[in-house]
Image 1 (cartoon, rainbow, N blue to C red):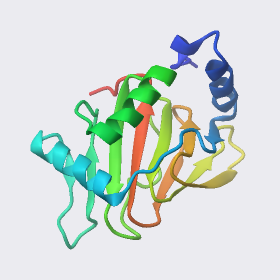
Image 2: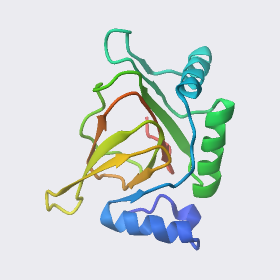
Image 3: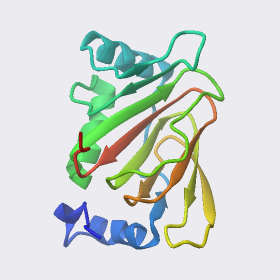
Image 4: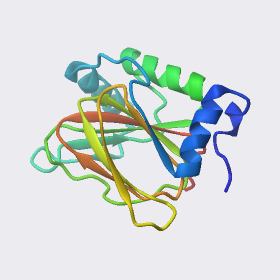
Length: 177
């Protein structure tokens, strides 16, 4: 299996991510100190809307979620997070997922073609992650702001929206069209 974060080879970050790669996933508590507010999330939303880069924007009485793929124009505060993770982990892409309501819909159980580092930015979010080795075991995590979850490509996981939230999903390989 291809190591997608090979740009980090020879660093402590590589060794730590390799542990997660071998297991299929790894949680990182307090990866980064964050103090993002609802105002920051709203600012990023309107910034993405202004630049016409929102892919999903549900109606007001539906899920009130929004999705900004391949973030290129972050606001100042979100940009600090974006730049830090991209520089430290040498990621190549960042997607933003956000919800304005409790118990909203998510993308459900899925796997990704790329390794991802999911960073919880605002409020909490839960995930179940399945063992990639066929034991049919699931592990559940609740991520708080600043926590991250590395998930190896091909590993099934299910996001569970607990309430209003913003999550940034970083990856090392661009998504295929």
